[in-house]
Image: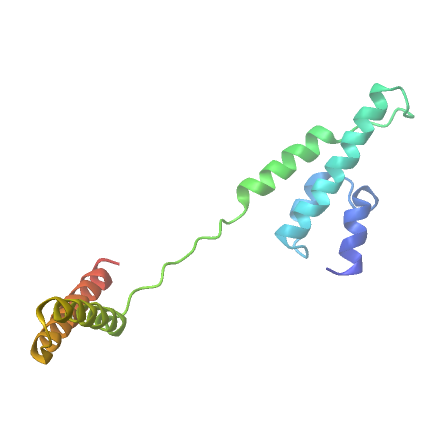
Length: 140
């Protein structure tokens, strides 16, 4: 964050006449605007507290306006949406083959050594994994 932005956050009323001006400043990022407005809101809240204790010189508070602009900024922020990765056919084939080989190893443990059974189950897993990946790609 640049020193200029830090100064805007520290003293927003020095650089902006109204909270809406922060929202309209195209040089600032959304995050910088939010930080400036939150600082302004904190200052306005302190002013309201001071007014309640008769400790002000009659300044008018900006709490309501800053709150409205801050809410407007939050509602116009573009939400970050995670884009799921499409499963690829090679990944589906690989996972299917590994699962088939694992099933084959379990079957060999139960029934006795058989290279043929291991190969058949690996091939079956490869086919099923490929089909699942292809269907998932088509549906996405």
